[in-house]
Image 1 (cartoon, rainbow, N blue to C red):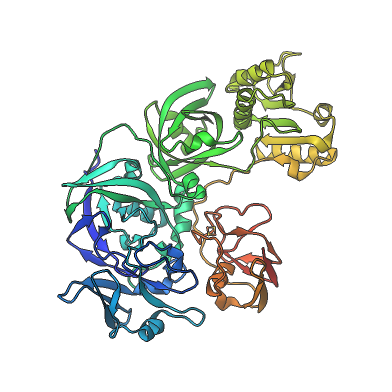
Image 2: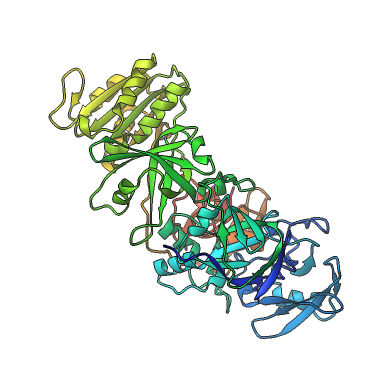
Length: 606
Ligand code: FES
């Protein structure tokens, strides 16, 4: 049985972006911890909100783009004349400003704008210490961040580093000996003595956690490691204060014992809501075919129920000897959740664990993912070509066609060893019976084929050609082994079916090696044009990645993890680029993850 959850450390960070101050106890008010993130270092490229209002984090210098800030810290000192916020540099210099009762800077004669600019400005960026009269948390509604030290240890074990939890800049560090148990608190109310917190959403991580918390500077690609080993970028949870009061180091934490409540990811971006690992529970397990298990998974956020036919989810394993994650195509969707169908591979890491899951088991799940979707009402003839356990998208497409009572012309072509090996083939048959323009064609490679019912062997090019009347109005949806996909592409090329009419989602396998930065192969200088603003800058290796250059020059481009994992920075780049940090997820076709890329010719960023 896991040890009870306890508070192990309490921290506040008076200046956003700088290291903080450890406390042994504190009052938790509706606004969290007093004097937490009351000041920020603005670069003046994003307007600040009026005094007293929350300002978005991208208005401030932050660790993700400024790893040098990691060596600075700040602490709050209460005095008779108002709170002082003292900043300490890595060289040990200190200076403070005094705040008035509204939180505004009342006296900066000791820490002058000139000193702030000298300590924090760069050759291309100004720095100004500002008070907003509000707390500058990353999210407006979430004053408390919580990190489970057991999760930090699990990440450390996976990457072979003894990680200092302070990298994660939490207000409350807790420990239960059970990694990722904090994610099962989502949607719950937790109690610390008389204080109550509602756990809102998981915290998505970026390169800020790669910064050494004592010396500053990046010493490991930690978002890349998180993604490689755990299949997500999240660590810790945000909470809001429901009932105020005092908390202390060592206080035990209790959580309500309801069955997993619904979790709202309101306020999260679409990308965060999709990729956040959250509690799911298995509501039913079936054995639809030899060596196959189907699991109905209820998602605490309801996000998976919006999956389009052809999309997949991801299971994040916290059981077994080492962390694991796997993508599974969704084989059916209804209002309660989604179904996955998994073939057992005896030498696999994940599938035996998934096959051992029973109804009511808790899992961590994220998604839906995938661009290769099928529209049940699409205009063109759809040919769904699947092999083996690749039948799973065909099942969700068949169900969506029936739900929409579609009259779309669809041919399902499936190849498998034997009839007993195929899970849920009856669902394809039912769709073909119920809908006027749906046909199915089953190819069996072993001996139980019945002429007229099943075909023997594999579909030939001639057979596939017989299905297609107009190549220009045909879409192919393909799922199966790589060789099967290759054969289909070869056939499509011969029949004049364009690549953009072939929908296939390549599953990338989990990788456990964590990419580390490489040198830019060419020194330039190169011309970089930002098409949206029309600005042109010169790049050389001192500029860093294309995203670093954009930051330094005040070009505001979307970004999040800065580690080639989240896809937020994907953009079309015309010209040649090189990845100095190998992305852990592939960029969408025709796009570049500019957080990891440098130019090797003149380029234009769309
Ligand atoms: S910012 Fe996440 S992939 Fe570039």
